[in-house]
Amino acid sequence: MIFWERQKSLTAFYEACTKPVRDAYDLTQMQFNILMFLHNNPQFDTEVVNS
Image 1 (cartoon, rainbow, N blue to C red):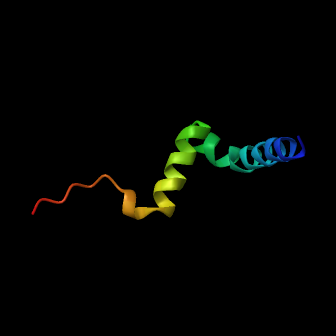
Image 2: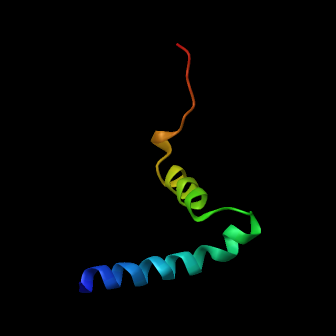
């Protein structure tokens, strides 16, 4: 149970830290998470390159 309690605390802390940015750009937590994932993993962009 300690793991889940700490996970919950870390999640709450992460959401609190990202709140000012999310509010400034009117983003949900999920939208913010997706943008951060794409920023940190550019190989997963959706750009289609025609050969």
